Image (cartoon, rainbow, N blue to C red; front, side):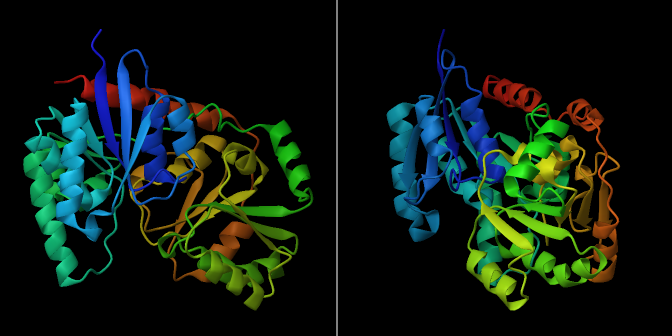
Length: 365
């Protein structure tokens, strides 16, 4: 049996949404059928990297494209020509253009562009010109135009183009592992020392777009309504120092805990009473799929795409209505129900189903 050689390009292999999708492809690969390699930008070793290497995946660190596009293309083409890949699958938004061009020039038959973000904030003229050039390269050099959701697809390819030529690939999770578990809820709350607390949870990269500072600003008012409230922030990122300063400024040291990156996310979701997600924008947030699979009520920014609303657990609110957020969070009621994991499987978000679709594309040419 011929082994299919796959090159996945991801900005990093740190814990994150798009990174998890890219890593899962390697984790699910049958080594008898697929040889999976990764390109990541920069020298940092991400959390997924050692695990992928233990499964036989190779990881190559190349410079950021912005450090020198010519040098990046030269190194990428050398790598592709050395290993003669059958598939190149890139997850780096507009930088995907370089990967698709290199793949086409080197004769890679399956060239997949995969969008994960719906960022629409104001951009400089220079950035907009770069994006237009990359969109042209992607449209002309890729042969599969994938996205995790309609807004992410429209953002990278253009709305009309994605509707006519795009492929929707949902962000899959292990729905069974995220199913609500009463015993694990008790264990995690005890381990955290928060048995008697009303736990407000959040998971995400600590960055401006995830807007964790919004939750910190809500906490004084939340504590007035529910004095036993406690905010649990899962994740790591560049905004951590700023958030730590904000916690001290608001005197919230006894009411907020920042856990850093964790691998046992389902245990933490079981422990929570409500999830809060005030993002400024999203593509198809993996954490909200996980939250719904767990049956956890969630107060969510109305800027999150509609295609993530798959259950009755989500309550969307505008970010300028802080009092409504306080009322919704404090009024949330957690139900012990395992039905939501089944709902998410039926909606097509189970990782096994998603991986079958991806590997079918790999075998399509």
